[in-house]
Image (tube, rainbow over all chains, first blue to last red; front, side, top):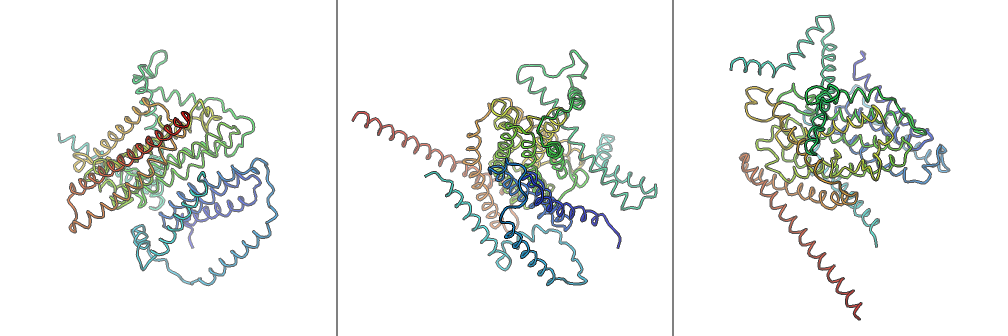
Length: 168
Length: 416
């Protein structure tokens, strides 16, 4: 096997994601943890680019870094514990979190082992992936129903948020 | 005129020719083709990356000169020291001054995020330029990504956390509050901007920058003026121009999130801000003014670049006029304008435009004539503006009545 540029980039982005993820849970400064999380999200976008899914890469940057990441930073800046630096690494619920993480890991490993297909040949990526994505999302035989359910859920969340913060 | 045609033809293919020549030279030195191509691409990326820097250096000079003339001053000139005719080299002198200034680090900063933030902010601004089409074809655009305009939105949105990074790591309450305010403003105005871009993408039927330019047989400013207005207002806020210049309101926040930065680190923020403005002007040109399209582009593609820069310059000029005439809004006015006016308007505009556009496509199975489509879209825009005006007038009238009734009630109480 010859090492190509995409192998090197894959290793780079993989290190970025894994290293960043370890840093997120081990650093004692909450703000630094949030910044490490940003690195993880950026690395994920890079992996999407390598998988020739540019739309997902941009959506990753746009939604995870531009919206969710910012929201997380805002949220932790508004907590009172934020100023008490450095924080302890674990709180009293660490065993619950560890249990959940272990279960999730088990499920993911199980699913991967179920779906290992030897000698898989990558199909050529179609020219207009965005077009296909758009059609699939509104196609009744495709993902129209999950798409609509997700949008109803989001509208409900929006209305709920407005109701909660409304002055009475 | 023969030499002119030949010159234009040469210039039009100059970039491709230089690329081919460089690749040939490298392969002549014994490099394999793939590596030679990689080097050529890297050189191209460097050119695309440095180009905004050069544009910005002259833009800063032009901005200062125009600002001075509007305010009845002379602006940078060559009296005293020699700064070239009309002070054209003033920005270079300023840049050198900034680079050689002492690097001051306040006490109690968080060093790594503090030093990383200026780099990341410039990085994000430079990345925007990769997909801006300066001319027809493949050679005058960094790369014509299939997600074109979404790539730009994604990068400008992903870079927002850098402001929080800069503000928080400065260990200064004004900087932290300034960062919060910057992100609140930029995240908020991203929504109408995104909705306006979505409207354009729906009508053009593609997210490719060149595809959007090709779709504009009638420029989108004429076909969809309301969308252009929403994008224009939102981008004024995104680039932090005067009516929305709340990111560095001196009386409230000292200097916003970069209060504690000085020297070239401050220069990086200043540079990124100018680079962003030029990029947003280029995006406005591409989305609404037909990009590089203009007369004689078919004969000489390099003329497209000229039209592009003329249009972009006009957009920047309108910004300068607005920026130098209007006073600054209050923070609540800025938020109200976005959330209570611009965002609902953008949503209504998206719904109406997409429905009308689909209707036109259905009504003309063989493809609608260019002017018919533009005319109907324009009509729907006008009707929507009238409807919005009617609704807001009704709302105002009700409010006046309510206030009058409340006044009457208190009056009765007083007399009783």
